[in-house]
Length: 412
Image (cartoon, rainbow, N blue to C red; front, side, top):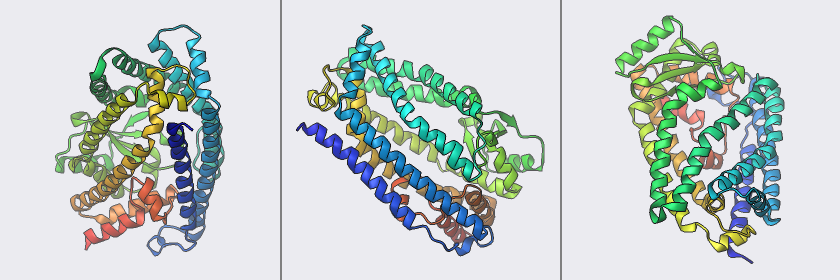
């Protein structure tokens, strides 16, 4: 049997089994007893609802993963990748247009498979627990916009990558690295101005005591911002959130309208201080630097596996091609991607603790952030007792009880 095929099957199978096992452990970790820390915030019925939400989400996720994994294995072993390749080659286009069409059709097939699960999750599960506010019209419009955005942004970068690997020789990986990083920076600057407004409406925060508090705090921290906005998050969900967007003097603060409805001014300042802490402690730039290095590593490793006959035989391909190599490399890179993801999450959790400390010190009121975290957890029906293995493998934020405990130490 082809050793590459064995490796790929082991990777797919191991990933499925590990994720399923961790999900089941996470279900077992659900505690019927409300943590004492939350007795002033949760009532027993709301807490029961949060556990039910975690349980339903987890079972649905395992079911979705099982079906998609089975379909992927069937597609792979039956030569599906080759059938799509034969189809796009039949148009007689050049190498680069054929590669774009090949990647586009595979993406379309993947989206079609995932669509029923997305619909059920949005209109059944999220609605069942009072989160969903997405209408069918909004949902369909979002899909159309996402497809068009993928075509507009994805086609040029994929075409450039294919061209580099086709025609620039041994330095192609380096040119791809520089090109994609440059393109990524451009998109980062365009996103707040062009991309995000396609999906949501951003309204400047009206003059109010809250706005004055935000501006005063920003001045005290010598933190330049170009505007304070609310976003119509309630258009799709009742969940709460806030974030910064943009860089330097173009930074903007964005609050979900749902957030402003649920937490008071002092708590909002503490959330803002936490987000500001990420900038002040250079977390954004650190993660961007690591991400850039990872991108370079990916392109270098990819260059070593281009047109590998053994890999193409594993996928039952009749023809070698640069564009199919890009797709197949994702399967080979998957174990390393998972390992790097775990390391990233460890760093991100450490950054969250550091940003919490920054907020506690600069506002002088750790309890404000504690109250905000509690309200966010209740409003989003967060799992208060995740299994440590689940946290280790997939959590980018520490569990809320750990964050509260750390904030209490800052206070003391």
